[in-house]
Length: 438
Image (cartoon, rainbow, N blue to C red; front, side, top):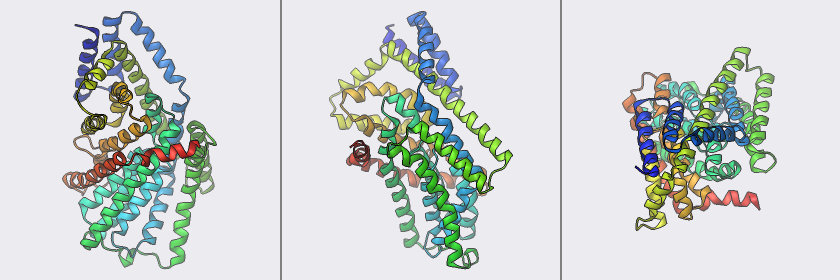
């Protein structure tokens, strides 16, 4: 068997092990070391050392714990609840006001932190009781909460984009800038859909009940200001300084984490226990992500050294298909893989394998990464993994899992529409990075 086919067999074994349920990072290392040593000899050990040290020296990945810490602090401090209440009260007279409050809050919160699971959980805790009392449609409510919560995977500062940048060889700042408008387009599609459904059928999303409204406009504006201003400060301290070219993502992450910590101390919304919970959660998730990055880099190095990646790229290039059709085919593969897999193995294993093909097709890497990011949002919304469904079910146990799935599928259709818009109009992703460079 040739070295190229040894690599293909190792890839099949890898996906088989992942589907069975083996830990991804250790499976990557074990297969890469075993197959690499058999095919390449001692050079496989040197590759492991080189790849792990390369990850340790990648400064952009140092921003991962900063953004995670910032997100967990915001979750523990209760700032998101205040933001939601203010928007909810401001839109109290509008049909579907709770859907709007969920989606607007989720969009703003996504721009302040790059985590997803906490957003879905918090939105479920905050919005589900009000939605149930107001007689909102369970499926549409579940879809709005889960889809809104997953915007954090796309809208910068997204942890996924931070990880994807070094993998593809594109500056993280460019990926952040490219994801802004596609993220807002998706948010806009969600809002338009929920508003349309509420106005076509008022029973789906009636205005907020009178007994849940605040007594005066002044009280509503005060609540809104107390919720919005801190989040805007966080966004300016992180995303603002990145897009303005003042700081790198790592520096901005540190700045944002410090600003959030100071705000929670001044507002007295943080306690020693909450701070410890945030630190432990940051440590746990950061270690998981960075170990996965190092392990996947090692597997990718062995896979490329065997020549398997080039063999796949050349085989696909020989197909009599134009570049745009090839791009659609690549995205379809990623879209389907997003159903059983999370974004981590796809970004760290599948994307590097397809990268030589994308480069030979002459596809802009920033545009490609943005399309992949939109596709990978489905990993949080598509059964059977659909982690968002389980986060929501955990905090709203009275909602049936089948209804949650049905609600998420509606918003997956909107995601496909959003993906199509970014494909048809590449400038949605490419205009802002180009403008910031000039």
